[in-house]
Amino acid sequence: MKKLFYIDYPQEHFEGQAHRYRCAFCKQETTKINGHLEGHLVSCEFRIAMEKVGFECNQNVPRPNLDTTDEED
Image (cartoon, rainbow, N blue to C red):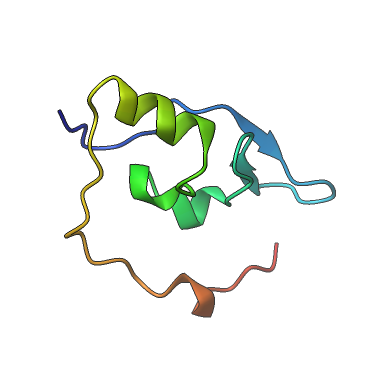
């Protein structure tokens, strides 16, 4: 099974940042996850649970280079 986006994972707020969030399990920033299961770390509890119930990563999706984005608030 595949979902278009995986956005139902628990998130936590970055201290001192108004609009930055990350996965509560793997600590990857939401802009890096970008709604994709493969955006979570392989060891992420959310990703493992989703894969266990039959959801799949979409490995063929081209990922933009997020290292060049402006991270200033």
